Length: 292
Image (cartoon, rainbow, N blue to C red; front, side, top):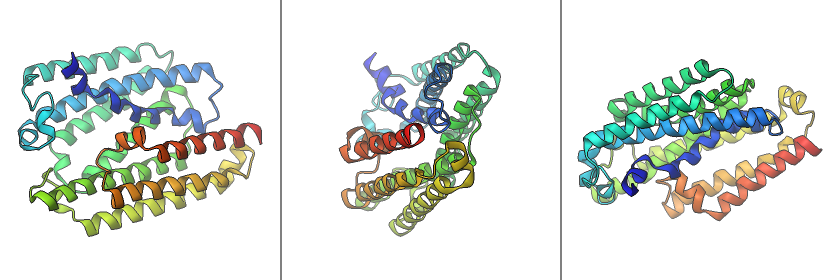
């Protein structure tokens, strides 16, 4: 059981909190029905994401066996067979589809978004991840599909700014993750991914800088846009921009100075500074839209 849990990586399910973005930014946190629909969609996405983790480890099993750390993964170490890996993957897909049955509305539409996410990531695991830039764009687009599913399930209209910012922020995090791969390649002389040879530190550093800058500008434009001001009935959301700036700077520090950006989930779960920034952003945003 322990190896199965390691294979499906439940600690990575924190990524699927993105599904709840439409509720947060749509001023629907007080709507119990929307919260229920959002949570069900998040659970469905967690299961489908775990099925992709299984497939990814199956496809990469040969490479993982040569990796100093990934060789301990359940499939690479032989603790779970390839056949068992496919079986667990199938179970995760079934659980995802069953979860959607608990949605009171938009089951087919939400399932369609999740199904497209699954198909796209199967293509990613089998072929697309071998191509630099395309790989990080697909990862970032996967998070856009998460918020689209959340908006679909809760019937909340998504702001174009939220969609764009989600893509840009996840693109930034993906490039930061690839930086860790480039560092390992430079140290060992062996590329951890087939597409790592198409990256180098100069390109990665520039990509991180560009995506961070555009993300910040996009967020500031969102807070001062007439659409946002009219929706939230306040002009004060620009104050939350300082948290976005601090968060981006802190993550760049982790990537460039500490050289520990290989796993964004672990960074979020263990870095107190990042956690403080996220908490401060959330509380400030809520206070402004609900009490000011």
